[in-house]
Image (tube, rainbow over all chains, first blue to last red; front, side, top):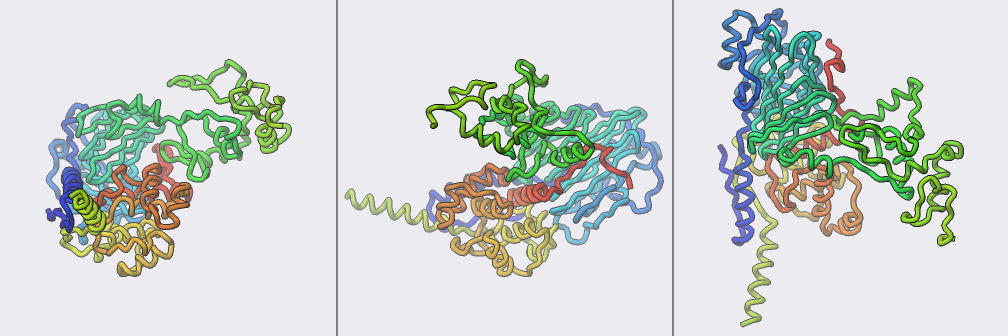
Amino acid sequence: MPNSVMQYRINPIVAAIACVSMTCIAHAQQSTTIPPANDSTSSISQKTMTPVGTDTPTNTVTSSAKPEPQATLAANTNNAALKAKVVEVKGTVETAPDGTEPTDIEAWKPIKEGDLLGQNVMIRTGLRSRCVLMFGEEPNQTVISVRRATLAKISEFAKTPNEQRIRMGLGYGAIRGGSSEGTLRSDVVINSTVATLAKRGTEGFEIEVEPTTGRFTISLSQSGLVEALSKISNQRRSVAPGEYANSENIAKMWVNQDIFDRCVRFYESEAVSATDLSFIARETTGLSNLGPGGRGLFNASGRNLGSIAQTLRNNGNDLSPTTLILPDGLSVARPEGNFGFGQTFRVLTPRFERSGLARDIRRTRSRLPRPSTIRPNRLVRHRSSSRR
Amino acid sequence: MHSNKNIFVVTAIAAMLSGGCAHYREFQPQVEPETYSETQFLHYLSSVPTVTFAEGCRAMLIATDGADHFGNHDERYAALRDRDIVRDSWELDPEQSLDVSTMAFMATKICDIPPSVCSTVFGSWGLGDRRYAHKQASAAQLIPYEPSYKFVTGGELLFTVAKIDDHLAMREGQGEKINAPSDVAAP
């Protein structure tokens, strides 16, 4: 292990600051080795695995590492271990046997689409790179996407008569995935040095681990339920769609996300622009954010909703702002409660449709009295004598 | 007596300010990082306790271009300087440790984060440019929330480079969209 002591030229104050920093760094020097598959903290009971054999792959990457107890159990059945199929490779994606250093120059070999990866195989990716792995066959498929700058490992892939079991290790970086449960129950656990993600039949889960610092984020974007476990604080949380748990909020996740993180906006007439209206028109879930510079909408999984809206338009579905106009007293049923709409929505009367959106916004702005005197439903006709 | 005390305090502060910026790491990697490929270099970063300014420049260049087309630090520095990602006025040596605010400035420039008013007015003079960039990068979640004067670990640099990669991919409309098995067409 290299000596991490730094050389300081200066006075004790700066040295003291640096010592504090070094303490943090030393604390963060947790090994980036990928944790074993059989995490004792996992709530999934250890069952006898009966792997189902597959055809011999044409291009198989396997490891000579000592098999883990579950795999040993599997080997006793004289069946070959299951293998994950590489269905997409983008950029630089390399693989090596378990235990290889991430900086090893010789051991890492590139993989390509169609390769089959066995147990105890490590995967590393570069920037602008990712690799998508398919576990199992229809209808019991699990897709795992190893994202950019990631060090990961396939720890276990086995089947029982009623369960498909997948264990992956994550040194650092991010893993995203989803699974469909058909005839078998899908049991997926992604284990890192600081946190564990256990899936309970979901689509769109993600775990991201920051190297050396111990920070992590576990999120779920689509459906199902994910269980997040922080190994540092030993706290456990269920993550529902649209939520995330990280090292800071895992103990008080609901409070933080509902009050501070949620995008609850109140639109005042002065603030409405064409971009805002476009956002309001397309944002119907409360789970998206406007992209940088107003370019596109992105939801929690990073999906660009703009393309979805465009697809709907192409199919003849109108997404004009009037789709959000609601009569007084009518609320949208939301599981977390109805936060209501700002007054701007009341401005969006059919008059706006007839006369053109931008022109009416300008007119409305010029006619608006002070916000405290705004009376809903009368904004357009109201004239403020104080401004003339 | 009182004036002597003031002189001592001023001298101490001056010494702290003058020396606090120059900071070199003693740790030396077993393999020269210049010999690593881009991917090896990124994963090498995850194992080092601190990174130098030269390593930071190389990582940021890889994040910007997706590849490192240059052979040494001087060429990389010139390429970054031409894009206003680094500035000569900082007077940083290649072997000097990289701090959080410098990394934040590079990240905000690469991601083209719109500058704040203070950053536009004062940062254009070089006054607090990195400090303001630190706030912007923190708000954009490009960097870990750390003090601006802290020296960056290799893992934090790798994290920031990955976030920049995410940001650029989303801006170009190439964010990853796979969420479900039904989204994946088997080959």
